[in-house]
Image (cartoon, rainbow, N blue to C red; front, side, top):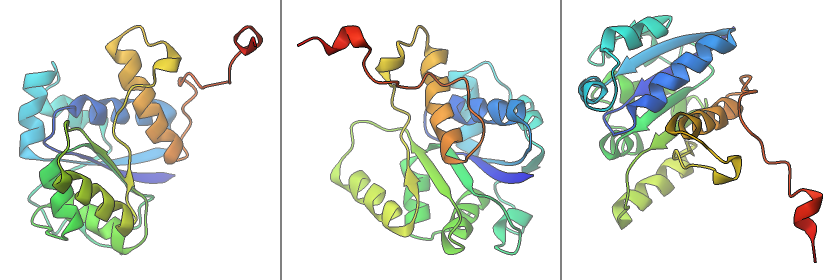
Length: 194
């Protein structure tokens, strides 16, 4: 069974973390470990109808963001990686600079130091040079930067379709079944006119 840490940071877009937990539960074969920042819990009420307790119920194991002695704070606790969805610029900065003053950042730091998969879903726009520099530095440390950007070739019909596509691409990276994703098959014969 895979063990995946889901960190939900304080950026707008907490629904990506929630949907990821839902899809991982549906896929089966994955034990989820959840840590949410205080701001993420606040954003749940601004952006969704979800309550923090209901989001926690989606995960197999939950941690308090201030518990830096939790299992996921140690490299000796084996996991298959971590996704931070959504990842605020503050959390990104903490990860890049190894400023592990909370469990979310510490768990991400452990993934980097032990060369485990760390996927960051930053949700900010526009970006200034400092943000871009942090993306570059995180990538150089081994993180995968996967902003939730809509793929319009799938012809989304709702916000849920857009969210699901981004989450499905994250599941692809984790090598977890995501057969709900509309995949590009190339242009059809009708589109190959000269």
